[in-house]
Structure formats: structure tokens, C-alpha cells
Length: 408
Image 1 (cartoon, rainbow, N blue to C red):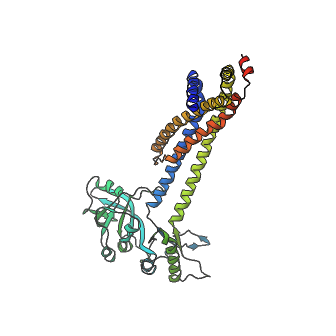
Image 2: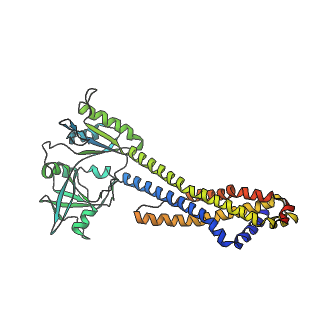
Image 3: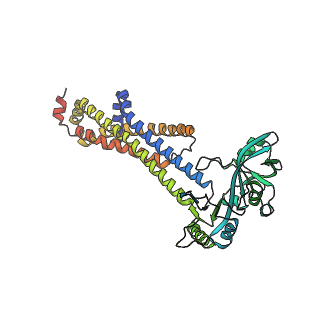
């Protein structure tokens, strides 16, 4: 009953000074809107990074060839031809924690269909590539092991290549020319989107590994591969798979204490964890910076409430004279402060969510306005009202009734 009465009096006081009440709320509105928008955009960026890493495949290890040294200058991983197709088959058959292995040879080529042409990435792969990459075929079929063993001229094409060469036409069964060699399109890959490096994963063609090695990208080392993608049997088996693969390749490549490994094994789950942690820290930093404006808004509320106490000193004296207790006066002014901040918080939450949507559309990120962020923002705005409104309310409650009645 007392709380309801205090809220009625607080509403009446705020209506009497609408413009001042709005300007007082403005700091809270801006602060809450900034917090909601920054946290939402930061969470959206984190999700986008996670989705891009996940698009490469789940429970994934990447094995890169070693480096070369020429004239005292050492190149990075992948610059030497140290991995072979036999290594990939050995990993698949001898590592219990490994589910699938997909060796790959990569190059670029001009692809021609009719009077249209397109420059794209051509990957020599095995059928396991789609399993490792969690990449379904939208229409047609996957490459088979018979295609790899027989070095057939069949291929799978990505969405981007299909759009540029075929438009809306179904590409399955059509003949394209890669480096002037005719290939039959046996399947259309489902859309994959951008990678973590911003590359279009749909802008590529997959051909049988042996075909790429023998007919498209000739090499002085015909059995070598450019990279090996390995899928573990589960997230809990990923570290075990990494140990098994490293031990096997060390044995096959005769790597000992006196010889440096000529390959590199990278764990994508570690990369994802680091990226997510970085995004989380950035979101917290953005939220903390935006929260500063809430403190500024709270100080503004304290100043206005102190002015209000001074202006309404005589009113406070009259209320005390007719029986109002110190607690009643305290609740009245505390209710005004909390009402200001909660109303500002509600408006700020709506503006923050709308701002996050606008920013997301401009930069192309997903928006994640979580219920937790809304609840925390609302509770924080109410807390600001209680914290910064308590001193003015306590000051009003501590006024001497006789002195308050004499105030002009």
C-alpha cells in the first residue's frame, strides 16, 4: 500500500516536470541503449566467427607440409612437398581415433562452359572430403573412390561457379572445360558461405585427387598432396587423434630428436576457442565502456533529485506536519529516482535492440540480443536509480519539519 502510494506521488511529480524528467532519463536511455547494442553486436560477431570456423568442418585437424630453406631463407609451413597420398591412407587405417581423412591438392584454373568462363579454385580430393567438411551435395552425387582410382574426368561444382557459368540452369550432367580438358559435372555442392579469411568457399570445383595430380597440376612429385584434413571420431577424441596422427607421421617421416618435423598439425578447436575468447573479451570491453554513460546518467539523476528536494522543501514540511514519517519521504523520492531510471532503461533497451539490428544489417553480422542482457540491463538501470537516488531521498527524509515549513 505504501509502495503504491509512493509511486502515485512520484508519477504526479514527474508529470509536473515532463521535460526535466525526460532530460534526466536521457543519460540512462543512452547508456542502456549503448550497452545493449554493443553486447548484441559483439555476441553476433562472435557467433559469425564460430559459424565460419565450424563451416570448415567439425572435430577437424589440418596437417600441412613442412617448410623449405633456400639460401639461408626459410619459408613457412606448406612450402615443401612432404605429405603424400600414402600418408593419408596410413592415417585413415592406423589411427583409431580418426573418423575420416581427406587429402587435397589445390590450384586455380579457367573454367569454360559454352561462351562463358570463370576463374576459380580447383581442388583435387577424395570422397571423404565432403564427410570431413560436413558439406552435403544439393543435387547429383559425390565423387567416388572409383573416380579417384581411375582418375576420371568428373567434378563437383560450388554454388558461385554454378551461378556464373549456368545461371539458373541445373549443371548436373553438363560438360565444362578445365584447362581445356572436358569434365562432366556429377554434383552441385550445397552453399557453404565465407571462410574465416573472408574467402568464398562456394567458389571452387572438386575433381578426383588422381585427376588433379596427373592431368591438371603436374608435379615432379606426383604422389604429393597439399594438405590433409582429418576428422576425429568426436570432440573428446580430438586431442587423442592429434597425438596418434603426429606419432604416425613422425614414424613414417623418420622424425627423431635430432630432426625437425617436416609437417605441422593444427587443431581447429583451439583456434575456435581463442577466437571465441577474444570476441568475449571484446564484448565485455565494449559493454564496460558503454556502462560509463550509465554512471554519468546516474550522477545526473542525483543532481536533479537534489534540486527537486530543494524546490519541494516546503511540500516535504507540510507532509511531515500532517503525519508523514521519514520512511514515507524516503520511499517517495527513492520511487521517483527508480521510476526515472527504469522508464529510461525500458526505452534504452528498445533503442539498443533497434540499433543493433541496424548495425548488423550494415555490416552483415547476425544480431544476438539475449534475454540475459535485457534482464541485466533492466536490473542495472533500477540499481542505478536506487544507488544515486538514495542520498537525495535520505536528505529529504532528514529535513527538520519546522525548518522545512519556514523554507521559501
